[in-house]
Image (cartoon, rainbow, N blue to C red; front, side, top):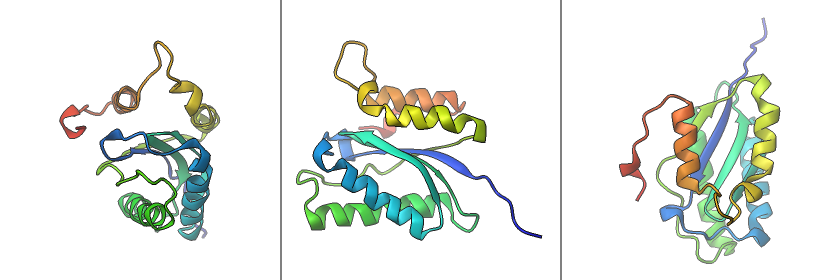
Length: 152
């Protein structure tokens, strides 16, 4: 019998100290790089997006891939690539933690649109949501305990 899985995560993580270093001009290069990493791990990327200080991924995981290992691989490999290629000259590192939230199949289309609209969502306009507020909202929507002491 074949194995059937639907293990989809909305993964969010930021730059160290939320430094606004992911310049728009090269962000698509980063997104393509991460997409390649996911493909090599047999994961399906539904959408990737982000702004100067954080990124969002909506991806399914191959059943043999552990979430923590995948995120660690993305962060370590992309960090080395960013620094080696000088993609974002002021990038120092990714933040230590991450958010990962399971996603039901029927919620994917709306989340894809949400990730596509990250620039508009975080536009520097009155009432715009910053990364910390967004992450807190995602954590609380998942009914998890918000722990602000881990965000310097």
